[in-house]
Length: 138
Ligand SMILES: [Zn+2]
Figure 1 (cartoon, rainbow, N blue to C red):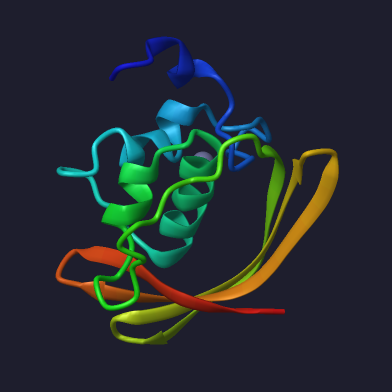
Figure 2: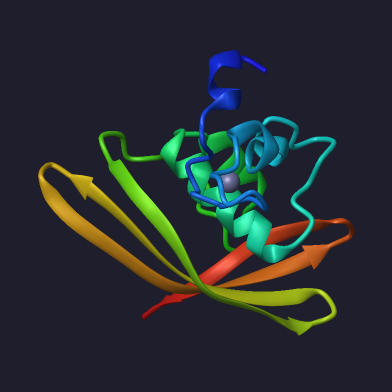
C-alpha cells in the first residue's frame, strides 16, 4: 500500500464494527480499494461504501474500475476541494441474482457550500465483481 498511515485510521465510510467502534480503513473499504485486482467488493453495499471512500480519498482509478462499462463517463475525474462529511446508507436490497439497489445520503462541503447527495443507485454483478451502473436522485 502506498499510504501505510492511512490503514489504521477510521474508514471514511463510517462503518461501525462489531465492537461498536469505527472500522479501520484497512479492515473496511481499504480491503477493496487497495487490492482491486484480487479482492473485489463482495456485495453491492460494500461496493457502494468503497466508492464513497474512494471519492473521499480521491481515488478516481477505483471509481472508474468499479463503474459499469456501459454507463462509465470516459473522462471522469474527481473534482478536488470537496470536504466529505459522511455517508448514511438508508437501504440496500437485492433486485435479482446479479443486481441490487442501494439508497444513500452523502454530504460534503465545497467552497463553503453544503451539498447533500441522496441517490438510489443500481448495481450489477458480472462474474465475481459488482459494478455501479447508475442512480436516481431522490
Ligand atoms: Zn469503509
